Amino acid sequence: MCFKFSSSKLKDLSKARVTHKGEAAAMNTQQMEQMGQFKITVWEEENFQGKRCEFMLECQNIMERGFNKIRSIKVENGPWVGFEYPEFQGQQFILEKGDYPRYEAWSGNSSYRTEHMLSFRPIKCANHSDSKVTLYECEDFQGRKFEMCDDYPSLQAMGWCSKEVPSIKVNSGAWVAYQFPGYRGYQYILERDRHQGEYRKYNEFSTQAHTNQVQSIRRIQH
Image 1 (cartoon, rainbow, N blue to C red):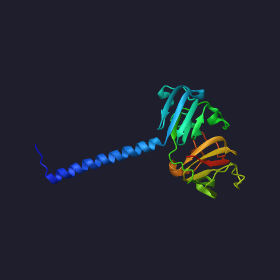
Image 2 (image 1 turned 90 degrees about the horizontal axis):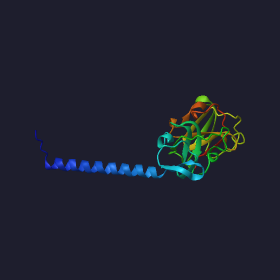
Image 3 (image 1 turned 180 degrees about the horizontal axis):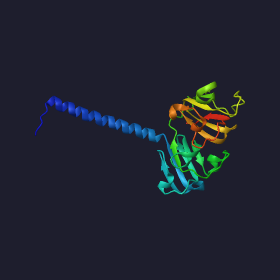
Image 4 (image 1 turned 180 degrees about the vertical axis):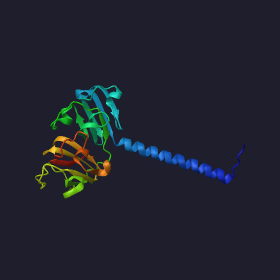
């Protein structure tokens, strides 16, 4: 069977192919630009020694790359969040631009120090100059609320009358909340593009959240 197309039809098909290629090229360019915004290098030993690997995208399990552990890190672009276990589970660690020669550099202020970091991903919605978060007195965004656009090393010092924050809504940007004042204790990474920015109960803060105790909070640097 043979099909014939008019010259005008052939021109339309040719234009469609060109348009499709153009769109694909634009998408590839956009993806590459996004990838270029994030870069992290991890080493198996302290002080940037031993086996190393660079990433511009998330890593769900570093052991699948032949690593037994991560002992030092350099973040060249973008903020990242590291996790204690594979598949983005367990305790969280904020990783902003800079050098982390030993595991204490990312978990030193935690009440529960761990040498484990086995997965990590970029924090894509961080915007230090445009960040807003709302704290609520009760679960499911009920009770008294407080909106903030700045860093607070002590929520009680700024007027929050409790050591607990049962629910949080991220209106824009990305934040890291801490269990204790002075940005100490467990870290909870709160992002606008996760859960639609809605954390209705404390166990949605992270997989290791065992309490709704939050006493300091700050914007994530980007």
